[in-house]
Length: 443
Image (cartoon, rainbow, N blue to C red; front, side, top):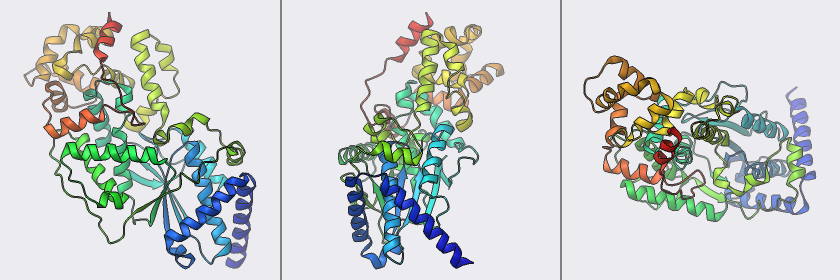
């Protein structure tokens, strides 16, 4: 019976490979052969390819989808020629957490490539600083309490700008998740262009220098060491009032996680429409233009921008009917009232924006303004005022008082300032002046 099963599976794999190659251009098929050679060399030869484990951080853009299709074609091609082939570990990364539309598209791709039933492939879903087996029907990948507090705290300290809130800080979250990958793979394969990889490394080194993390040559030789270091910075950003000890990172084993860059091979997009049609998905061409934004669900940012429009242009209906209005609630238990408070960031700078926030969103609380300041200063206040602050912000009084006073440790302050300056594409953002806009909206 097992022999019949193996023959049936072999036939299915052959069909998948034939369909893949049929929907690739001649140039793409040649690139698959070059990819096979590169993987065989990295493994040390065909006799060692069965012990070679390839890790892919999978985003939801055209470039990542093309890379996964090429790797699957390479894996199945090697299996037809050799006794064994490499193992493929796919970690789906979508920060802050993947929405239903993203999960549907990913499942369609995985089914077309026949990944979910292949024992040589491991599909994992990253979320909440943990990994779980991928499934569109699994429970929502909810953020941890630490992730929820980190999002809210950072949002208030980042002056409430959506581009900063869902910006470069999420790369620290992603690094922490990847650090949780169990057995160290043999290599990480990426199609991110060299210019973008250099930008990412330069940004990482800048963060390390500002926070006192001492550099190590291992960072350039082992991607796991880089994730370990950035994961510690993520802890510092999540708990800015606590001390995080800086130390020299080092690989935990003799093996290192190498990076195999294949952006020079995954560059022929002329036949993508045919390939993506075979995979049963539709991806906008613009998605391939921002490779560093491939690991983030844009619906979160869209919803935050809709909320901002609500209090600038009074478009309440647009927010209530927005597609992403349940995302933050499902992923982090953060409702729209708390998000609106976050976008106003009324408690920072000794509550400078608090009067405008109350006038626009909570006019009934204007009479309690002196008591709110007393509570945020650590002085006695009515219990109802404390409950209102906690419920409206989603943070504790202790956290709000740190935001109000701005008395962060120097290391955390430097890190926060740096993280607020770049978006998810690591593009530099202008210095914010959000409270002027809020005052105008409130008037």
